[in-house]
Length: 463
Image (cartoon, rainbow, N blue to C red; front, top):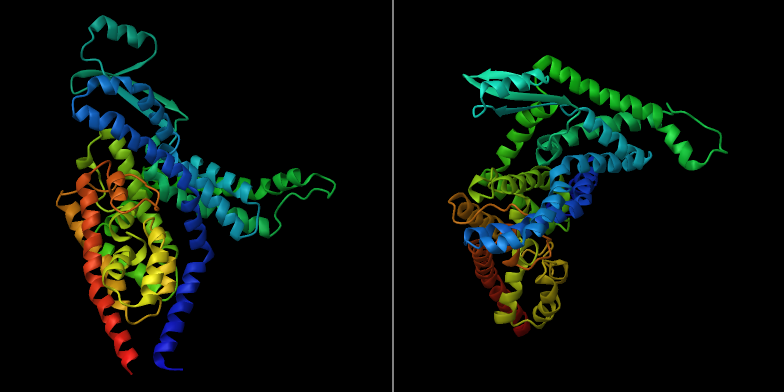
């Protein structure tokens, strides 16, 4: 066995272990489980772009007024999906982690959800200016028991209460806290359950009741452990646990992910894993989804609040990879298919391209990856590895310079090239053109390698 074969086998073995590590798989599956919620919320925001934002910018006030019932319904859908995404994720991570530890997954999900809620700040304060009210009204407000405070000489009404759940913690910015608390609570629950620290009932008791009672002790301890962590964090720092995680973990990690170098490296690694026959997106899903998906959802939330793409906090999100670096699938193989149709002289290439083209339009490219093959094929390794990073660079710079807005809406990955970028950016034609320009760039890079394959075949036929 030569050194190259050993290197390939070692790489595939290490990559396979990474891709099958149960905690990473649980994180990946949790984000995938949320896709219906993410898509529903993004569709609601996208519809309001066309019902409210674009017509409003054009001065179509009558149309916007007529669409108001639909706009309101979309607002309800957004509130019930992206608005509470961290709550949904807290259940999903508990469920999938519990499955990997072979304990009751439904109980694990519920315990993780309860633990996350237990760590959220439970007090709220609302302050409203009373500058326009005369003294008698302010005195009447005081007399009914409400608090009136002096803020820089202006009287304000202050109301506070217990038991509120702020959307700032339940939405996209709470995902990292949900992830961390989900791990703490679920591992505590699973560890105790697997050590039989449970309430055992006779076998004659119905299974559903038996499972519920078996989860009481480990579940109670898990929730208390999470609450204790949140309490100690607040006592020691004076800040809620959620704010600490957001400030010192989530924001720095997401900030690092926004550099052009990070985008290029991740795009390259996806291609490298695929070249060895491993699903690059699945292997790197904990990073791609764990960091860039919260950025996408946060962009969605900010747009819904401001309706201004210039206010979006994150330049590069999860959907940016699909919009500008995955046209036709990994490696932008739709460009390869076009090059084969126009310039290939090999019948086997043409046959594979014809079979792959319909699926390639919807970003499914396994037929061409394994049919050419591209996997472990030295003839195509160079374009396969360099095209997505080059296209990522083009799109990144276009976004950074303000030529196109950041991606802020989730779109089904099977959406055809150009249309994906248009929808993901809330209807930006320039984003669609950048996506199609990247497809053209991919075509130009694939072309000389297709021509080279023609020459190799002709030389073989002359022998």
